[in-house]
Length: 554
Image 1 (cartoon, rainbow, N blue to C red):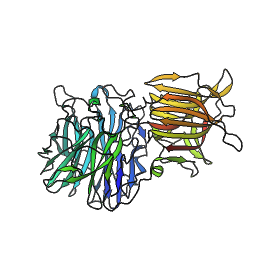
Image 2: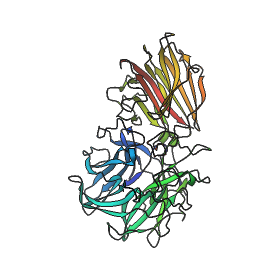
Image 3: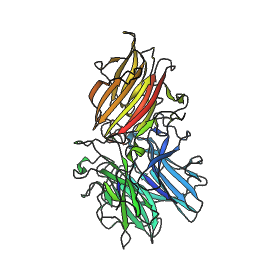
């Protein structure tokens, strides 16, 4: 029997919403402060998933100034079979200060997943993690109603209302469903399904940390009342032992770490029925660095096979509720995972376009500051990498605990505020940057390293190399949270020898638990990126030129 290896989408791909339309499978995931927003992965064999497109790529959202980990949360894909339309609904989390969690939900539609998509219409500000369900020409939105009052069950109720997708908003009133189906608390991300005689409400619980899980309730009527799964426990989790955390704020629940499982944080699920009539649930998960509880790749997408019991409840195919790293593939599947094709990156910029996998924090990539010209990538320097407004960064998701990044950069700065190079990036407060810069004292171009750690600027003057030509090959070797930075100067007819600029740089803090996110949160929940970038706090007139960009996972 063929098996599927988890995660099916490694690297930052959380809150998966899975959908099948005909022979095609789609998964949409959160993107937070990264643009373009809402990444969509596609598969026809259910084994190999590749980035297909982004759904918010034409300036529909402004994420400049977004604090970690706000931005675009939990997009939900659905298909209205009556109208033959795709629908997307998503949360734009604008403020998390004071645990107010101000989010606005918008919906948009298209006849084809590739668009064109309609302009977003406003639905609600009641909370976050909305989803849509379509039935007989009517549309329903399920959402978490965020609770801010003292003395009330946090984080709030799951609520359902009829959505007005023609004009925006809702019809009638919100119907409060429940504050929990288990005692794990922190219920969120409700999604509606109908199977047999029941409506099912699938929800996340336990906080998006080590106590995370997926729980279920069902009802004969869409607005309830809903009965919880009779086990009283999540149907999927990485930590099956009992947890009582009703009323706790969303937190890491580090005490729920499961030392027997390579998969942690399994939760936030989405159901799909395959072409062969089998059922699977896509969910997020994390993998910590060896010997730590730090998760640099963020929350990734995995999948589990599920079955319906005779009395109409969902269970993992093996009868347990422990999420697995290997699961049975759908019947008749013979596909084998091609990790190099799906996960490695090889860009030589020969097609004249910015590569699809490139994302930029806080703003859209490209525009007037990045372009492909003559088979090379040009990046105009702008704000420092500490900026949450206009950093000139083109980045790809890290998808392995062991990988190598290589690039060649040509740069001729004439001011100390002009730099260009490559590095690792989590957010504006946390990154490592190997870059060319101008030293006015020595009147030469130098390669050096600058680091941001919890918002502090960290420079190491001991790791410096002169690069007279202004052209250098850079190599970043990442291995279980440790980084080695090497360089070489290209020579005519030969590549030359690699020299270590700095080794054993501790990059483990570039992880969800290692950064300084909003107060009250565990840090962040996005993920590590590799990037090319440039800074020009002088005249914004310098241009960095990159010959190629390669990421090879080991």
